[in-house]
Length: 198
Length: 440
Image (tube, rainbow over all chains, first blue to last red; front, side, top):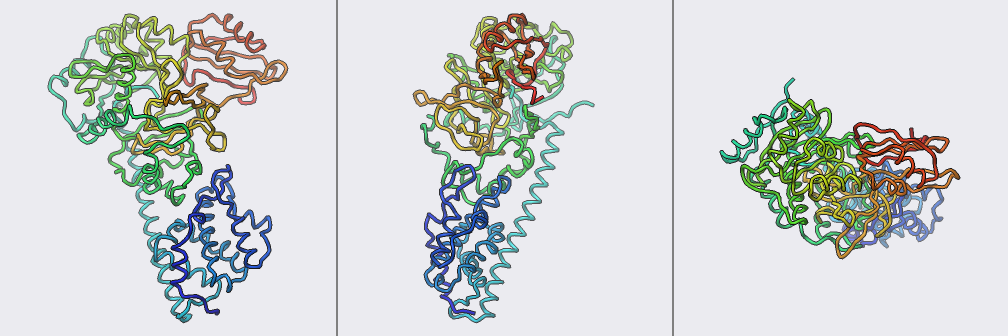
């Protein structure tokens, strides 16, 4: 494993994420401001890689209207991922194909679990995000052994996973309760007096 | 099976008001009321309605090209509290990047649009079904209905009138005319104990058909609300009514019918654009559909949800938290218009309650639906549907007291097409409908 910068350098870098990397990805209808594929392509070129192929451009764009929410979270996470990869200490240690693998394969799952701004504003999520990247690139944080780095990453991601599972269970319980309540009120015709036609 | 009755509001009315309510039910000409209802207001929600009347209605509208001042706080609440929007992550800086949502999407998973801070026990429920056929159960907080009274009061104020207040008065009659609907007299806390009626003019809803005119004329409600069809029936069964104001909603009111009703009842008749999801949006006060209250942000968008500029025609999209149980965020109404500002007041112009359908003349060139609407605008029509056949001839189905051959004549003149007209006795749905054979 390669030796990398201390974890604090990366979390600090994330905390300083500029507005432009938190801006709105360009949507299929033309709204939004950032062309995510162009940002990724610039980063890969800067690392000495080839510009993105048209298949790769599609990977870093909205896929369908049906998945708007999923795509938005994924693309926003990719932007923050690009910002982390711009860190000068990391850039020197990273191969372009490894950077692409991180953005393409590792981020969709994380994006489905939490919004991208969390990995900028929440200290624990900053650390988890930094460690996820180092792990994908096969780099050890400065001052840590392999076992210690692995344990620390696992601990952070387990806490998050548990919280996500709990939140999903709570949400499902509430949705069921609301559906039952709406059906009951529908049967009872529970509504305030009507004063007009709609 | 008898319908279940719901309890009166948590707040009690005076003895006199309660006696008045009883008298309205037991009146010798009263309809066969089939329900008990109330405004369901508590001390807190009554205060909410009063605050709406005092501080929201009458506030200036947002400036052309900018968002209302309440928008950032509203977006923060929605993206934090509403599961559907929480899925999108944080609030986009660009408002237009928030995806629009339509009735079908809302109907598919309505519980995900209810904010986390709404207790299930607080919910009340209304229903709606549009021309698209997507039935929607609308979770609603009780105060939304009383906010309609506030907006009606404001409308009446434009004509120097107001809704009466106090026990013993009949402030309003909501007049329906359909085979079946809930009917009841009710008392309003916002109107300090004044009564409101919800009646069905369908003869089956009364002991004797002539009771309809007798009951309503004797009680003399100050304001009458209805739809073009029910108001048209009202003009036949209760010609002696002299309300201060009539309001027509649900579907657009034709110019001809409006004029006829105004002459008949000798009062202003106002066409209101309203949705079950958020109630009154705009009212036609003579210069076009004027937006009524700045708590609903209205924009016009293209097919892809991109905002259009002032004067461009597209779909009407609303945003606002008037109904705390169902905050609407870029909600596509399925209705079409252009938005124009005149002296700080936004108006919806070229309003049409459904997507334009392509009607062609005998040479195959497009004809604007507005030409057909224009040709028919001075007839007292409750509603009409214009269908174009494959051979380009038309069939005009209509409801209203008009000679069919005259209607065929003006439509043929406006379109250059030949066709026929067929009269129907009642009208449900949008008052101006257009179809081509491909759609049938």
